Figure 1 (spheres, rainbow, N blue to C red):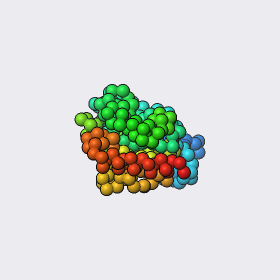
Figure 2: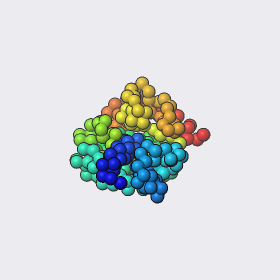
Figure 3: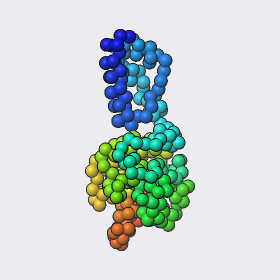
Figure 4: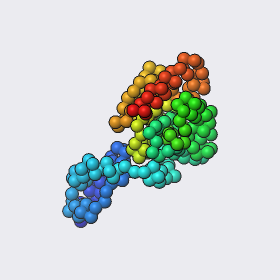
Length: 246
């Protein structure tokens, strides 16, 4: 192919691959006839149209190990500059219940595991005392961003955008019955809108066909340990337990 024809095609292909990445895709099938089509000047959009939606989804689903491998030693956003460890997630990869938090704190950054500090102890208490479940055997826990935001601030939009494809892949790999969003950032990320958590906690929603419960972050209960807040979370987890038993 002449250089003058090849360069626009490669540029278009690059832009299309960037578009796929933004949509959460981390790989595409590679077949010999694709290359034949490219040599004949077929546009990337035409190549994409040859794939059925089911084929694209099946190629996009991965195991948690594969997702973590894809994440690698991530430098996709500025949070990587100050972290000690990537905090991918922990628990049972086949759990029916997934908790999604905001981001790692100092203890999590140090140890490389989610919810191991004060908020983590509170979450463990909720799971094991409040729900009579085993944290490691019955749940999986992760965050919307995998690196600690400076000073434990809320993750920023570009940081969430860089990490969200991996959160999506984690949830696809686990296929839980119920997701619990812990706090406003997690709820807003999963629902794709600004969520007033004090108004919407305790309500059921759906994420990709999975039941989604919104509740307070354990850190909120530590900061504001009122009887009203503790009762609210207790009512929320009772709803989750009822759904898990169906």
